[in-house]
Length: 237
Ligand SMILES: [Zn+2]
Ligand SMILES: [Zn+2]
Ligand SMILES: [Zn+2]
Image 1 (cartoon, rainbow, N blue to C red):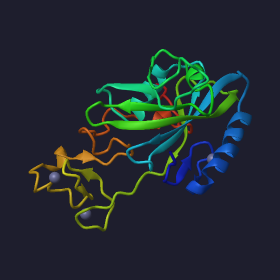
Image 2 (spheres, rainbow, N blue to C red):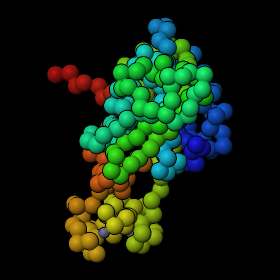
Image 3 (cartoon, helix red, strand yellow):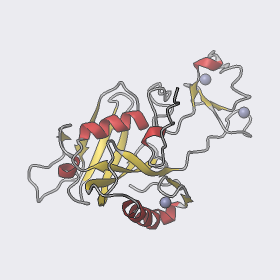
Image 4 (tube, protein in one colour):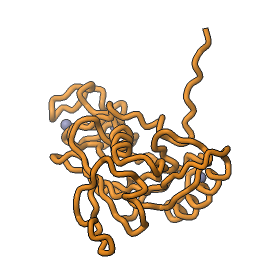
């Protein structure tokens, strides 16, 4: 599945057109590896694309010895929510490995055993009611010299622009369950049709879950997973 939205890279902090994504990521992954000290940790680079809207996509680095459980936790905190069921499944029949067919993959499986080849296609299924599918493919393996303790996003889609459906002039910041998206000004009185107040609307959030299953982004903490994240310094007393 091809992603369709321009990208932002957290290795070099630049934006790039989608047509240059592959080239850009090759260069920045090389820089990422060269920049670091020396722990020789094996990292797996994964490409994730949301099926519901391929404008949403991610490049993620994850320790090769991490498990799907770790990836599940990351996906929930980056894009999804804490509740609802989720699982990983193989979606490509790999004839050379008879044990791998169209089936659920145990959460305890390690990243390196699941994403053992670029021909492996995995899908992540979240929320068996209002489904969201995420397609996941191996990009490559990097021997990183920088230790990472959890998956990190090295690139993603530029946040989508949602136009206000009322005035059609400003960026939408609040979403109603009727799919109406309103800007700061237009959302002041909530949604008249649905008789909802402003504080009952969901904030616009950069996730393929937006507008699905009552998602409001309140379980998400995207910033800490971005490769360029710098934790705030603790104030000394
Ligand atoms: Zn870059
Ligand atoms: Zn408006
Ligand atoms: Zn409404």
